[in-house]
Amino acid sequence: MKYRKITAIVRRDVCEEVQAQLQTLGVAGFSLTQVKGYGEYADLYNEGGLTCHARLEIFTEAERAVSVVDTVMAAAHVGLAGDGIVAVLPVESLYRIRTRAPVATD
Image (cartoon, rainbow, N blue to C red; front, side, top):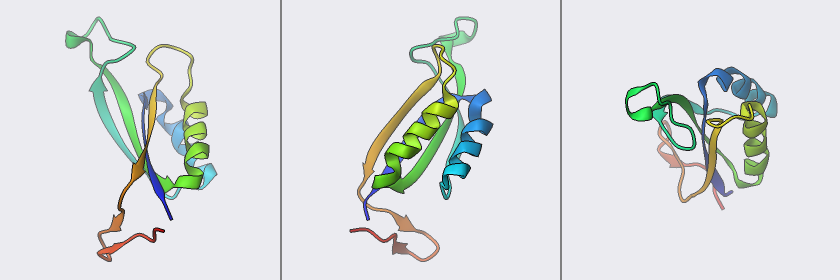
């Protein structure tokens, strides 16, 4: 089975909605990290223009990637600059640390 890594940078205030929608979709797990940065939107009131966002990282089967991305974008969309971005990358290898074995792949 092929996997994809989905990384999404979203507003912190939409995290609970994104989490709820991912759980409804049946996503088995994800990581959430608080991050600072700037891109399309810079906070001119803070030194360096940095804004606080959240980064979600999700590993999922390749055939589910589009539905996960659609779910994240629908839950995180506010319609303003600074809504965030989503990136999808192929995963070459995926291992489970507990068992020291690769996760089933094709």
